[in-house]
Image (cartoon, rainbow, N blue to C red; front, top):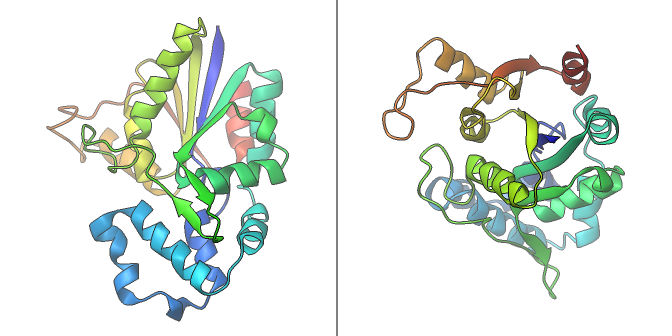
Length: 247
């Protein structure tokens, strides 16, 4: 028996959005109004591919991007939290994020956390021979109405748990830490009172959870009525979560 900790990345582990952060490497005027609206019609991943093309066309190098990502600040206490979970509390730590594998793995390595994270689930990304950062969708799904086409975090989490059970690794407690709207699906799939969902204070996920508890948010397609079975904890720093777990 082990425990599992699942983390989002942007605004959960790092105190920024890694995708929009790299856009600051060129003048804002380089991004056309049409490009800025692209994510509404084609999705975030295709939008980011066009962003990376603009960066490449304006001579932003891999080292420029890597330096910016490596130096993004953590949300206070998150590095200590991940280390404690891995080193002393019996947790496997995984990341499920709609950022990309290049950004996440680079940041983890720069912050000496690579060995603490068992697996990263995100949109695959790599630099091609021309020095352009390429990004692909993690998967294509249409079964979860709460999630985007390229990433259902709840599905990814459940598939990981099933795969681990085939290798005789059974998780006793599950901890989920996130901030955004796309963290709602996995939280709703936490199906017992041993699970703990930690939602960052004053961010979208915490607001949605509040609406569900007040009966203001319902869905008749996927779940009938939203039902939260996990315990909920609202946090501001990683130390808040660590203190709550210890208590």
